[in-house]
Each structure stands twice: as structure tokens, then as C-alpha cells.
Amino acid sequence: MKEITRINHVGLRVKSLELSREFYEKLGFLFLVGPVGPEPVAIMEHPSGVNINFILNADADSTENILMDIQKKHAGYTHMALEVTDVKSASNKIESLGIVITERVEYEGAKFFFIRDPDYNVIEFHQPASS
Image (cartoon, rainbow, N blue to C red; front, side, top):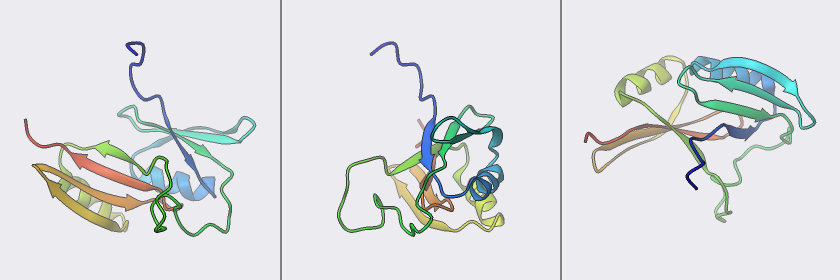
């Protein structure tokens, strides 16, 4: 469809707005509004234009990401990938914030690493291969 111009937002189900807001602020996201609406939802946005909607109704007892942490592979979104200009600089910043990097990968010139947010949602930081 030619009418699609970009991703508008990523929706993440979370347990705590306070914990999620604090975590994503460390990554440079700014709090916009929330909770609002019937779900309810809170919204944060990065200066790059990446927008996240936190759906504030996750089960407080959940301790894993059903799409990533169990052997059975359910269909669904597994992670979001944030493109970076310098993966080494980004990983140094993440580590300086005390955030654990769960995996590092280099593949065909691309470099990327993964972290988890407080609700076990996976975030990839991705530096594409040089053109």
C-alpha cells in the first residue's frame, strides 16, 4: 500500500508506568501523556520520532516474555529494533546506565545488540552494514 508512510508507534504491554517511564527516559525518550483512554495507555517519544505506547495492563505476576523465553514459538512481534549510527558508542552508553546487554551479534557487516526492559520486552540496537 503506497499510503503507508512509516510506523506510527510501537505498543508495549507493561506492569508499571513508573518503572517503564524511568527505563525509557534513560534511553532518551520523553514522556508525553498518560494514562489516557480505556486500556489505559501512556505515550513516550524519542527525539528521533520513535513513539511508544505503554499499555498499562500487564499481569503483575508475569516473569517472562512468552514470545522469547519459552521453548514453544508463538506467533507475534518479538522485538523492536532501533537503528543507531555507532553501535559501540550506544553499547557503552547502555552499559554505563547499568543496563545488561543480553546478546551481541555481527552479521554480514551489520552490528547489533539486545537488551530487555523491566517487562522483558526485547530492544535491539542496530547499526546497518556500511553501504
